[in-house]
Amino acid sequence: MEIGDLITDLVFNVAVLFVMMVPGIVMKLTKLVPDGFGKGISNLVLYIAQPILIVAAYASCKSRFVDIWQNILMVFLLSIIAHVLFALVAMNLFRWTPDGKRRILRMVTIFANAAFMGIPLIEAILGAEAAIYASIYNITYNLFLWTLGVFLCTRNSDEDVDGDGDADLDDDLKVIKSHVKSKEISIVKVLLHPVTIASVIGLIILVTGANTAIGSNLASANPNIFVEFFMECLTMIKALVAPLSMVVIGLRLADVDFRGLFSDLNMYLFLGLRHLALPIVFVGIAKLLILVGVPISNECLIVATILAATPAASSATMFAEKYDCDAGYASKLVTVSTILSILTMPLIVMLAQL
Image (cartoon, rainbow, N blue to C red; front, side, top):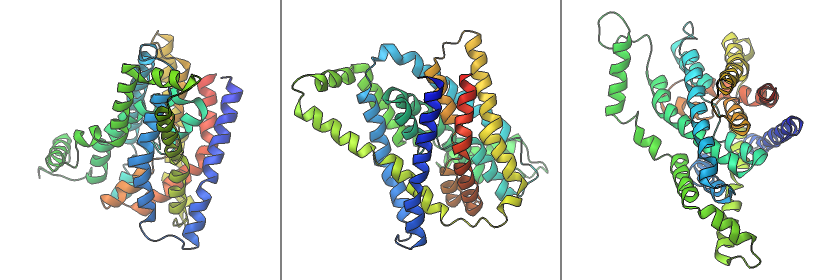
């Protein structure tokens, strides 16, 4: 795809996603929805529609596993680099802010909306094969979210756990061990996450060649009615992901009180890091890897760049509510980040393609 076409498609699809927020805003402002409605929709997207979107991407992929396994590994590598980079920077900043806000600022800087917004966006712009790579990226995202994310929301970095007069690495390790024992931090949650399960099912489809069999069947003069019915069901359900996830953001946007937000200097630092500085550094690292011979295809670079440049994760708000952090502040930052991304995402992708 030419760079001009890619940027046009990206801007167009991001704009469409933003319009999909409007029904959520209208319903909330006119009180057409009960309390908990947004959480119910989120669960529908997370546990049903999004996994089906991922499985449908694998089933619709026209490539064989032997042709794309290297791309899968490269996206996995890039996803680790992105999360480590964002985490290293965020964990060393915002030390001057109050504890509750510091946790939120670090959360929204590290974690992007790579699932709810990223996967349907990638699928719409680049197709089923690219959506496979997006699902692989999100395995790393969930690994970091359910380990570092939980730690961030529950650990006061100024807390002296062992009572020796100094908050240090030993204190951090003790907090982590306590959370592992209480199952707050759990690899099992990562392995049983809907995106991970859907990705494993998809990989089985690829490895066994079921996707090529499905494609051949649908392309034949008389396709099997059951295969056709199965794929049509997947197609219709996966179409729920983009509109419903944005409706949820719209519901939250309608509740946000923006008074005093734009005088918050920490917000500008977060936006500069999340939307410009860190994605640009990530692209630079990826380019260096390509220069030294690492086989990162252009499609892998585009997918990883778009996902790294997506706005702050809506899960930051959910984690803030779950662990009694500043959920209102998290909602404000996620909302502003989401609005800003319509301008910054195309810019970052353009830089990646230069």
